[in-house]
Image (tube, rainbow, N blue to C red; front, side, top):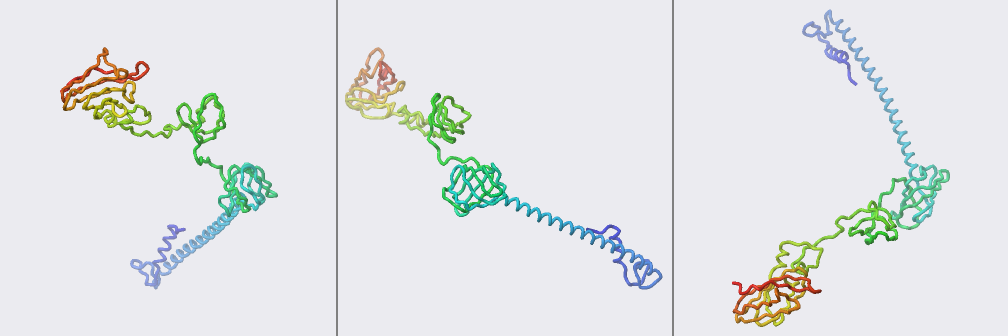
Length: 368
């Protein structure tokens, strides 16, 4: 609350009234003596009355506001009392001896509660937090306090007599404790029920069930969530993996390719048995006469390069097992015999006549 302009002016003038001699120019509010002191007094009296009226108005306003505040406080107290009473209707207690379990359970609790049919209820033991039940009210007698609940989920199955009963929201979806083993799914085959959150393999892909599904006559993809990666993690191949030509779950790098194609150096015995799983390309030092026998780990379409190096003596010869080594026109080549001579023989593995053989090109003799 504040003074009006007129009231402010009146207060300002009263502030100037004094008991010094009146002087029209230097002290127009003086009351001490002089013919004008009566006029000064009358004007001051009027200003005083104005301020008294303002004070009375302020007092009336304050009284009104105090009454309004009191009424508001009373209303708030009433609302709080009503809220507390309403909240009390949404909770109760029970000393009924009940063991948690699925299905119907009966409790005796307080009367006049808001436990209407279909209400979600959490029933929790005060003394053992692991003992609880969640379900929906199926019957409640507000006159006797008899409450029946259809329990959908439970905690520890321990009988208790210290239950708090609370109205609650709907229960959320519960995830699995562990994943079930994948179930193979084939069209036209009927299986036992596949529960939600189980994994299912179908047509080379892996899915997670979203609903219970029992019929194998059709595969309804709307009921499954596909796991794109299927949990497979590829590893890097080695040169040995590449030469084996069997692994279909690894990835290649340029270095792996180089490792697989590098030459393998070894001495030649009387019978030479190249292992193509060990090396596609090989170098043999001929220190005696030998025979090229059956290669190991041949693969159809596999390219092969062999080098034959004469030792310092020279004159070493090489024959071929005709079952596994084929030449154009059936003409078998002969090695260079000069000391330290280098010959190269290139070919390719091929499935022929029910078995794998090496079809060789011409022998490149005495490379310089």
